[in-house]
Structures are given as structure tokens and as C-alpha cells.
Image (cartoon, protein in one colour):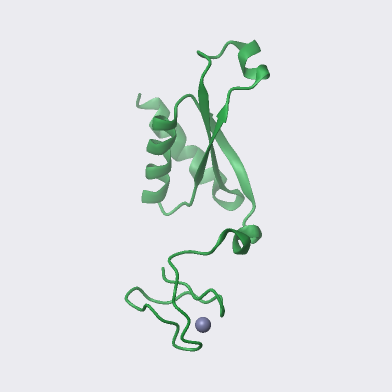
Length: 111
Ligand SMILES: [Zn+2]
């Protein structure tokens, strides 16, 4: 949804300027406006490709998410869960965590 960075209102698709302040609308909130969302880690996935799949599935259900790729840390290496490499952490808003977990489960189960 287009969003006015000055008024912090969302507008319907199709507008490119804010009707109130004439500011150019942007596609989404800049990072600093998102602090009100409490992001929680949903899962750590063994590959960024898998993480992208999960993200897409979540978006299809209207759940926001973001992926953070991390170099494997020592704790995971010690557990020997998988081959060393980059892992992808996926984050969802805390309010969506339960539904997101169900979606994640349905993806990982079908594999
Ligand atoms: Zn405005």
C-alpha cells in the first residue's frame, strides 16, 4: 500500500501523492517506523532458498516476514545439525507467530 512518510497514513493503490501534504507516497514504511512491530524469530532454516519459500508462503497468507542470513555460529556447529554454511533466520511479527508456525510446519512436513 502506498504510504505517506509525513502523515504516516496509508492510501489506496493508484495514488502517488499524498492528498493532504502532496508528499510523494512510498511503497512501505521506512525501517524507523516499524519499531512498533515486535519481530520474533520464527525459525532458523538451513538454506536461504528454503527461507525464501517460507517467506513467500507467509506473504500469501498476508503475514509479513523478513530474512536474515547469518554465518553459522559455534553453538550450531557444536550440535552438528547440518553442514556449516550460511543459515537463514526468518522473522515474523509476534502477533502472527502462531499462524506463521502452522504455515512453516505445513511446508516442512510436505518436504
Ligand atoms: Zn501526507
